[in-house]
Amino acid sequence: MVQNTKLTKMIFWAMMVAVGVVISPLLRIEGMCPMAHFINVTCAVLLGPWYAFLCALAIGLIRMAFMGIPPLALTGAVFGAALSGILYRASKGKIIFAFLGEVIGTGIIGAIVSYPVMALLWGRTGLTWLFYVPSFIAGTLIGGSIAFLFLKQLQRMKLLTKFQQALGTQVYDKVKQAESSLKQ
Image (cartoon, rainbow, N blue to C red; front, side, top):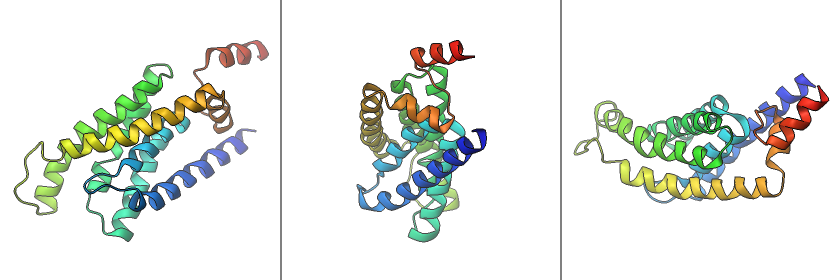
């Protein structure tokens, strides 16, 4: 069962990377990629912070290599993905904290880190430290809100816990935790 869980987790992760690469240019607003934030929050809740970070990294690298996207594809995703998963776990499974982690991680940290990357490494001029904050926050609010609503709906339908269990991810549903401890 452990091997199947690991395999299932890797397959799901690969599917999230593929979906992220495919939908990012289709559902894009100039200067924003809201669907990347949807993927980040969804991965953070279903797979955890490490897999969410790796998913954002993989999507960013693929977009940079094949779509000519600047390094914003990385700086605008990896911090939010990781912080989303970290805050989700720290809050013991509160989806709102996964959303807030994405907004803070990408909308503020990622946006500020983007300035030196784009100015010094990419040669963009006329930028300030806060140049990317408005568009990054707007993108995270759009994509993160969609993910929040999606995950809350899964939770209401009692599917979120089932998906997390199938993926071998930490489950925070108190009823399922009690059932699991009684079986042991």
